[in-house]
Image 1: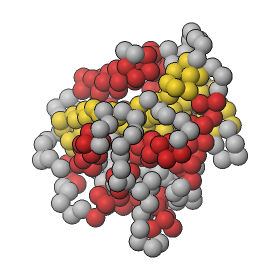
Image 2 (image 1 turned 120 degrees about the vertical axis):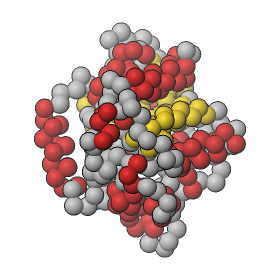
Image 3 (image 1 turned 90 degrees about the horizontal axis):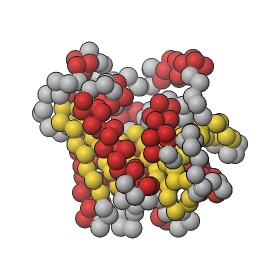
Image 4 (image 1 turned 180 degrees about the vertical axis):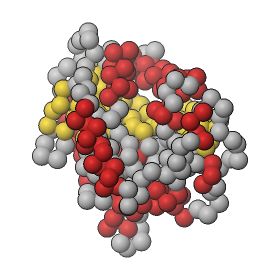
Length: 302
């Protein structure tokens, strides 16, 4: 990671904790998520896909036949969060780009470790592709943090199964590589909200029995996947003061080397989830604009 100070536009950085999620805080954070969920009333249709998976469907104000769509996967270290937490983003994208946005309610670790969350996302992708008002040839997949890691894994799984071909993977500071947990050269003073300790907890919860024999399945940690060729084009965004910076930059370069069209958007001095915490900052608005432009070009032809 770089030794760059926090971007001066991100004024909250000096007040934010270095970490939030760990084994001790998780129960309280889950209760808080449920309580705040009661007050959130997203402008979306909630659909039960099967016994394990539901989705929040954000439709644009003006419908059109065979609408493009984005399947969105929320973050939370694979252990926290829900499909409604990014409702503002989903609604804005749906209206601005005139597309359908579907946010997945997937099962969380450690109660449901790999491959359950990934299979839930694939179930949602299959459901989305079957909807009569959706163009299955114009579906993007995306997510933030752990959701970005799941979106990257979903792109790999879709390639393996060959049923659905997403046109873009939109990855915001994705959680891609469990091997980052073994690094000892990361200065935690440069981090906010997601620390090495949180990362170890999140990966341990998600991988669960998958690592009992010491081998991590590549679909669980996309950075371990050998052949990245044939994947959808990618947009990857991350700040230099994000724990995931190095693994994200490496993954973007590997995609490019594999012949996958990839855009890497690096934000100097930005911490994890900065665009949500300080949404009004100019660099946050530029980050979201870059995301939106990538989606527009992939789904609407620009």
